[in-house]
Length: 143
Image 1 (cartoon, rainbow, N blue to C red):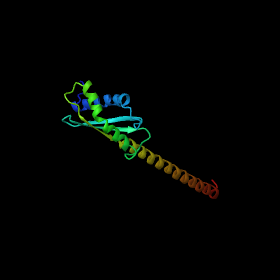
Image 2 (cartoon, rainbow, N blue to C red; image 1 turned 135 degrees about the vertical axis):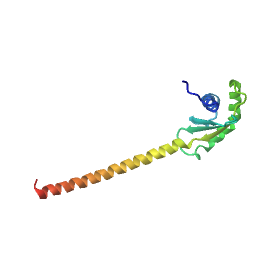
Image 3 (cartoon, helix red, strand yellow; image 1 turned 90 degrees about the horizontal axis):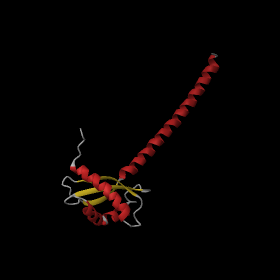
Image 4 (spheres, rainbow, N blue to C red; image 1 turned 90 degrees about the vertical axis):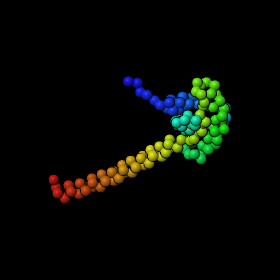
């Protein structure tokens, strides 16, 4: 049986695909770096869409503030371009937001790596101490 998707999900997928193409091909602002659209949330009434993006080399909202401003200023243009090609009655109002989850994921990965390294260091210290204790036992016991 075919899997069913809600209308809001289909609209979100369509917007993500089309906006990625439009931003790449139509927006010529040098302040826009390499950006990727990570997800789109569309309201139930299809009137509003929040578009989440990441930017190459940017990990915080503060660093991405200028990009968000550029994208939000261009949202009217992008919306008009979408309305020309879309068969929807109305195109949702677009709001761009920096996706913090990718940066947060990198932070978590870094913390996990640090924890693994410290565990490994502790294990090697314990292993060395255990080897010394075994050596003492062997010299005293004469096995």
